[in-house]
Image (cartoon, rainbow, N blue to C red; front, top):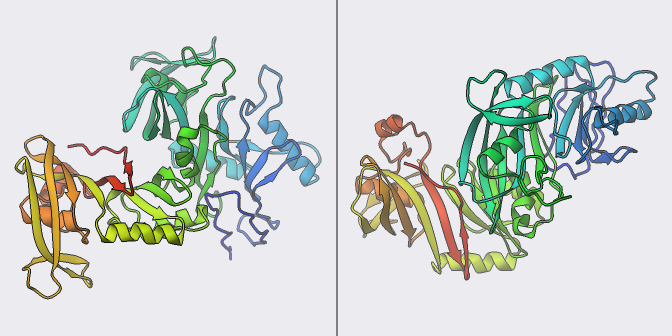
Length: 465
């Protein structure tokens, strides 16, 4: 009977105690290790009898090429040969690649069976690759890019060409804007195809060349290292069939982006916004519980984390956490006395009047997790107040800016539904048929901005009609 190995954390800096397991499809007992270094200096993030996951250094080719320089594959084979005293040729399967100047997470297969299964995951895009990049310009908050790339074998370069060009291949990626500085921006990139130089070519073609890219960025500063890093890789273990995520932090020191880079390990639940000795501010993803997955990821990164307020699981946007008991008490008092501004964006059904102020009384049914309208004098009645203004409309739905003056459970959803303009995608209080028509399965509600203690934190996300 196969036993489950230790969970592979996103945070590969932890020490993983060696464990012995009887695994299916192998005859020797594996040892699970991570965060070691080979004699040649290659950092090992994880290793067992089937996988070798490493942090590829920048400017090192993945495999031998015409340059004759040292390459990662040869160095890792030498590591295996020496560590396990293997005579003769060592098998190590190359199942994906990174450009020579790019660093980050790479996985290699230690058996031919693992190589076949991992290759199938990369070919089917089951394996998920995430990159971060610092680019020039002012990118949109989020965008999906689809281009056709042609690789010129004479120059070893790729370029965007019209669809249908002989030899051209489709290239797809999406990005989210993590932070914007004066002339540069930090992007979180998810790659869906694996074309040569794909991210570099597509971003340059879109008008956002990667900083330090000596090949595809015009007027790139000489001798600057390209700011592109493969920071996370998620795949299914080839024998255990369990999802595993490996993480590697980019070694950049750009001050403008340090909070976002520090919070990259929590990419599955949030984006980083701000970080200091008193607080952590994140942009939560829809579906993440504030005191569940989100708090858990932050607690694994920082010594002390204290929740100050909450968002509904399916509401995305700004959430503030304190880092000390003193700052937690201060922020909680500001929330309690409403000495702050909470601004939301919401897409609602229909077209409300241009602006308005709503006051309702509600009762919360904790057993059903449901909030109902009531009268002011009813037992347990809570006062709800908000104001709204229409930002745009397509005649069937409208984008609103909403300011909350109280902080009740499901408040915006209940109050907007009460005036006949429920939040789009909200099946609990809203119009299910209209949600289906618009193909929205989650509520279109964003905690856009929080102003507290003289500071303002804002989500870079945008809701669309």
